[in-house]
Length: 421
Image (cartoon, rainbow, N blue to C red; front, side, top):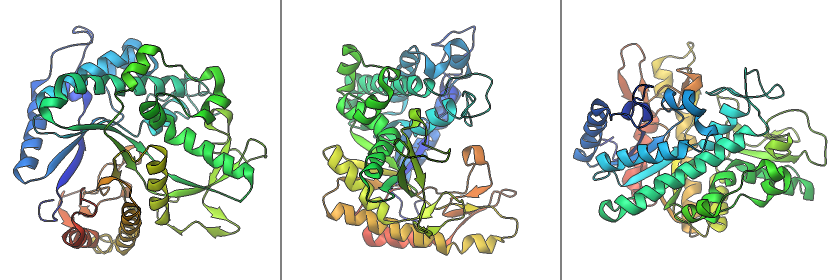
């Protein structure tokens, strides 16, 4: 990273590595000092090289004990546990860590974990997936509510005990697609509003405004949990920045007043909209390797401008943006190193981001996903997003063409936006 000119590195801490709970110890068991030492070593190595640590507290994983004890995110008890875990991290690492994210992509976590069951804890009901337990119509909103209030609990701890002395920032990171109406019809325009509401605004709105989006409230009614006056007081502490993970864009068709084929977003609990990436036979942009990723650089500027206007230009950080390729056995290492499509993608999206900045968007940084080819969650090692190639047998790491391009970009535009990874 130092050789590339990168000035920040974003990584996640494993909750269970810090607090490996067990039934004997109970919920607030002994802190694992080996875990503390591991992260201290990483943080110290980054600081020594002049690379700013950016830490995410929760990226999907958690101590199994909490799932078994009370159902993890389905119980309000999780708020106290997450606040305690955050306190431990602030205490041990906050003297050197100045950028904190409470959660990474909780909108994906609850949708895939509690609606279609493809992510742990794999809960869903029959219409949405094949699970042994769960209720896809209600549980995503309960889990999301407890994550939002857990975020508020962690922010409360940081504001009251640590921020003044440590002088850091705290926010939350969401997966943020850009949505455009499939047609000029009023129905498709309203469906696009619902897509935004049920996607990122689902979490951003309560944290910034203290309430769920109106589009969600109108459709879900009593299914949507309510915030108490005590909750509202904590939510007023809000956040210092919006973390935005952005990869692609979609057209949106109405499914409330029009018939839609079954698919992502089309049901009542998802917002009655269909997201597609082709219109009248023409794709939204060049189709990428992964099927769902279409290259639509202008979506970056439009999305950032949308959040700028909606949230009164709260500081934003692009916490993930990158291009994925399938790890095909037909391709050689040389093929992967000559990643021209990734260079084109990064160039287009960064130019679009700079256009938004020139128009006044308060964007504080940009992180490429990712530094290395790595384990891509449920996709394992089948996809490569890295700007550095990893040989999974020898673990040799080799900068790709995109890494060399990114170094040149940082050299030229280092502070517009501040070049981060």
